[in-house]
Image (tube, rainbow, N blue to C red):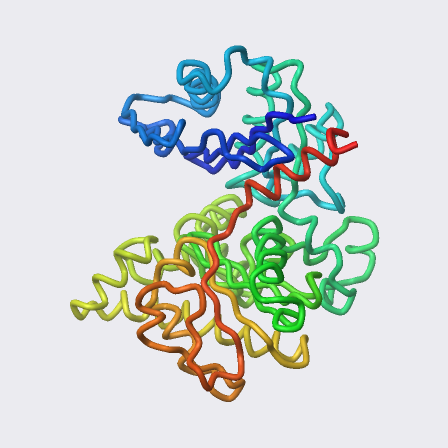
Amino acid sequence: MSQKILSINSGSSSIKFKFYQMPEEEVLASGSIDRIGGKNSEFSFSAHAEKSKIVKDIPDHSSAIQEVIEMLLTSGIIHNKSEIDGVGHRISHGGSYTKSVLIDQKVEDRIDELSVLSPLHNPVNLIGIKAFKKLLPDAKEVAVFDTSFHHTMPEKAYLYALPYEYYEKHGIRRYGFHGPSHQYIAERSVELFGKEQTSRLISCHLGNGSSLCAIKDGESINTSMGFTPLAGLVMGTRSGDIDPEILPFIEEEFDMNSHDVREMLNKKSGLLGISGISNDMRDLEEAASKGNKRAQLALDVFVHQIQHYIGAYATDLNGIDMIVFTAGIGQYSPTIRAMVCSQLGYLGVKVDEEKNKTNALSIEADDSKVKIAVIPTDEEIIIARDVMEVAGFSD
């Protein structure tokens, strides 16, 4: 029996969605709402193979969700909101949850508690859950956690060298994020290139938030983000890895409290902090091409850290069969891909410049020992599949 499933990905000022007929995996409608909470919010959507765009003030996430439901109704995709059987929510931090779960009050409370570890995402994820609960009281809501895919990591990869009781009693460990994206890349790579070519795979999810994942035979064995999404690579506004002793130094030197430091690390650092220009890679590439030294420095630091992790994960995997670039930067920036691969010759990595410039599926040179692919991620289909399974629709 077919079900209509809505996959929701709530960001700090945006919502992305896809509406599926399942299990056929037919996309009935899709879209995004950007600049929520500001003037002239943009609602772009596709329904009946036609693309539309509406610009209007959308004050908050609850209003944005109402707009999505109204669009589905007025476009005739559904005739009654009760036709929506299930809603899957991408949740940033799931703590100890090892798989997707049906949402009840206990789950909502836990997502709220974990907001301190993912302050940019968990709070708005929860707003989305509550808004849909009010608008669609009969639909089954499922939480799909960014962290779940990484629970296959061995202890040596996820344990921090802190007093063991911090992990044992308080769950302080590496969790990893972007799970649905890395999971999709693992599965899609096998579909496209076969198991042998993808046994030892490094997934590079590069966007405003970025992370790498070492994947062995479809399972995560290491990933760059940690206890929170702040760790790992340099990101749009997030610092990534730093010496922990910097934090008390900054608090004392600049008279900042822990909240101020957290805000600085999450919202004022990364590419924005280094360049002083923007957190958007397109802006930085343009500025660097015109000779802006700090923009170029931001690119160099970003790329250097990716190379650092690829080298480490080559060790974890005992070699590399394939590197996949995905997400906004990974998929659309030939410059960054070329820069990353330029120092990986010792691993047998070699890019075909012409293929890379056209964002081809495979961009490795004929004599490259490692497959290099550019694969668009699809977190929403992973979410929809989990809703089908967890809600019992697949039975």
